[in-house]
Length: 242
Image (cartoon, rainbow, N blue to C red):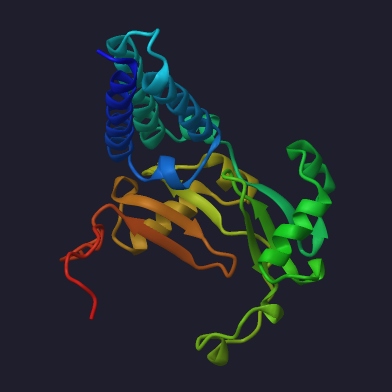
C-alpha cells in the first residue's frame, strides 16, 4: 500500500477513535481542564498523532495503546465520582486569593499566581477595584470566580425586599455525595447533632442527601437524590427553538 494512502486511512481512523473516546468520556474532559484532564488530553493527542503519520509503528499497537489509555481515564474518572478524597487528590481544591477585599499573598505564592494575572482576570469580571471583592477563588481549572461585596452587586428583585447583611464567610459544604464532611463541621464549630436535627426537621436521613451546604446567610440548602422532577432537563431538547 502506498504510504500516502496508509497515512490517509490512519488519519481517518485516528480522528474516529478520538471522537468516539470524547463521546465515551463525557463533556467534563473537554470543558473543565483539571490537572488530570490536562495530562489525559496531551497523552491522547500524542498517541493519536503518532497513529496518524508514524507508519514505523504498527497500527494495531497504537490502537491498543489508545484503548487502554481511554479505559484507564474512564476508571479513574469513575473512582473520582464515587470517592471525594480521590477527586480532591486528582483535581485539587479551589484556592482563595482574595478575602474581604484583602489579597492573600501566601495563597498566591503557593499557586505561583502573580498579581498582574489576578488583576487581568478581575478586569475580565468587570472588577477594577479589589476592595469591591468579598471573595475571589482560583478554581481547579484555572479560572477565577469572584463574589462581590453585597453593596457592589447588581440589585435583584429579592434585594428590594430584604435587609442588608454582610457576609463574613463562604458557603460551607456539609454533605457531599451522601457523606458528611466532618472537617468542615469541626472548622466552623458545627455539631453533627445540629446537622442531624436539621435533617430530621425535613424528614430526611443522611442517606437521602446528595449535597448540603450552609449558605453565608445561615440558610441550609439541601439537595436529595430523589429530585421528584417529572421531566428532568438533563438532555438537550430535540425540538427546534422558534
